[in-house]
Length: 205
Image (cartoon, one colour):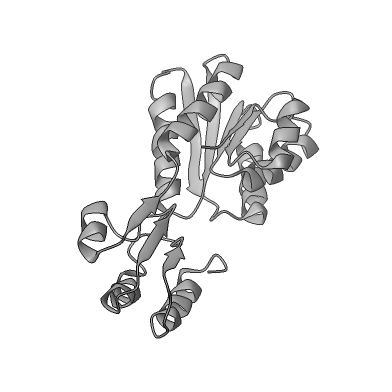
């Protein structure tokens, strides 16, 4: 979908006009592909949903989607955020940089983030907004966050690309030793950054 819901919809509309043994897809956002997916299923083609819900679960099963393959995004986020707040000493300012708002994986990671930070009254969330999975957007957000909150102590990112991009901004500001950061996906560059002590954690199911 090229990170564009409109682009993905156009492509899946085209897929719905063709014959397939089966169709497996990762929606960019929930509920944007219901009509073409319903048409594909009506044509007798099995559909497998990956990572992001096509529609709310009950509706998706009613549509006839064969199965959903997805990680436990809440648990992944909770594991990473727990390590971040531990490194912060359970106090101070933290920010979350999210994926696409309509992406149910990002929604689960946001829930996991709040599940942990809400346990600690001395943790202050100073920013929680989407960067749409974009490394460039993440860097821009973190330039603003650091300018507004030079005493920030933690950052959680819905994926490792955004975490690594923000890490460069944090390092450029001379705050790498101050700000504990972590992401999700366990990408090799992120695992290497954890090994070097430049990230606190990354996680993957």
